[in-house]
Length: 457
Image (cartoon, rainbow, N blue to C red; front, side, top):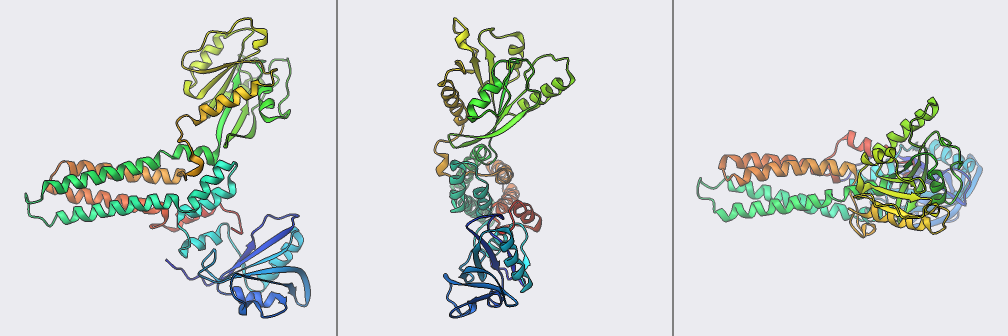
């Protein structure tokens, strides 16, 4: 797949602001004409230099020296975009960077759109769509584990798995269509048994990929962990202790926290969104009532809940009612203020619990460990070494599996008139599956994917 673009694009590839260097990226058919126009240095001009070399010189505009720079030369198709490409490495700073970019644009380039460099890389066959999506996942990664998963996807891990599924399904379609050439009642039974076994194997491989979605969502979006409980049980104290800073106001006055407070946190490589909430109770104050309503909204969306109980007063009817509405597998019950409780409370059925005092420095270590175990339950171990699918991939794979399931049901009925229908389902499934890697794509799909990128990538 090779697409020829008629225009040349340019953009800053580094974040604006003060820094050691800034990089201006240029890509397209007029790259070297523009480079010859703006670059002044000793030796051959840019268009005469070999690829993958640097040159030191200056960017000049109408005789005015804008900045001393290094210029990196690349030639298509062996570049990021698959086109002729140049990078200008100048001094960091928003003013000087804008001056260089404006100079390049006045020489004939246009400002790149978000993700346009990577979009051209895809259209020029330098990467498939899953690898292109891995670029933005890597940029936005909030933990080492998420970054490693993106690197694995960028290296083609998911692409290889999907290509295997696609090619095997395509082979099954070809074999099924070939059976239609056999006279009625002359097709060996072993042939159809083999087709059924291969379809089941393809289905299983697809299921295995779908099973990684929960993990992928966890790494990309982070888990929403809500800290809940009655007033004055230590919710804000717990948030502050986990963050290692005084983020929430701590007071003995009930109802101090009136709104939800959200902060980012990384636990064992898993990004979390920790939310401190208003104490759950019947409140007369309209402002506190709104805070409690928001707390309940967060609980409905939570991936996990740290539910605090004051051990010195015990579990109340309100606690029982609230816990009954929470998923036991996603709830960690924290009995706080055990220093004020003479005996250990009885266990709560079906829920993970810990008994401690947040005044104890070791208490946070216990909570972190139990929360990490709870989050890891149901996810594959060693996910940091494997790529995981996104929501877009999951939706397409589910659609593919649906077609596969219907085709398998038709083939198992062993009727000649059902084979064309089974083939039609498999081909529809293949068309859907092709949209994951980009074997099949349309303008709207590309706009949706690359709109998430920053300009310059």
